[in-house]
Image (cartoon, rainbow over all chains, first blue to last red; front, side):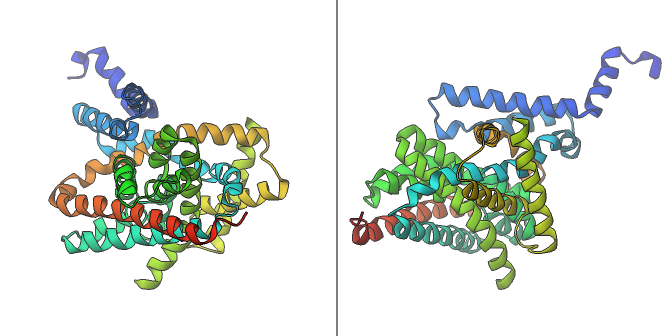
Length: 242
Length: 116
């Protein structure tokens, strides 16, 4: 059989064994996602992560490449999650002066929103018959994704499901947030931004920035603070209540 | 830029070590974040290199969780079976979270935010 194999097959064998293919696939799919996102005037439904995941899933099916093989190459991108988490300190540090004079309403929004996020998601999922694998993935879904996945590892939940639920939550929050804020008659930009940031982390924050700079700044601050406090409180709460 | 990356990686490393040996419940990178935050506050500003690296990460944060999210293929049958429960939980929870956070901020600032 061997002498008949065309050269292209050998190239393929070589490429699929190296991390390069998975890296190219990941970055190219994300780049396509970014272009589409920008073309649609930053519509949250055209989220670059969602587009990239869809494209890569289709590509893996077409190439008949198992997820484990893909991840072996893509783990170089994955590894940077921790480093990105540490560098979140910079936007948090720069946002801290915005807390001045508004510490009470913002802490209440953060703690109330954070608790509501977990309790409502877990109760609704259980009520409608979701199993514990799914419920585990919901605990950290309002935290920014790199932190959410770190928390998932600490509470024995699936980081993958957590990432997917986190991105979905961000998209839903960015798309629906405006209507909820109007319904509860919240009009101040700083309050609107902060509420979106608590619920819908980075995706909500970029949406808030596209609407109003003050809303964006407060959304980013909410995302950072929720990430830090959630990462400390959620693993502790889950392990105590279990 | 390299000096910024080195500082951030050092904080990540210290954070991972503290998390591993002292506070196993907190993810190591979050511990690193808190330490870097304390460092920035103590220093009273953000060094240029750290600023540059952080800005790059924030701009392309999304691509970093793509590899893990693609793992959703492994859960596909599982997710399909429970799609309704998941959809209700995600939509219901995000609406409730935005509403509670907005109301908390609104009601509490009405009583106390007029002070300078």
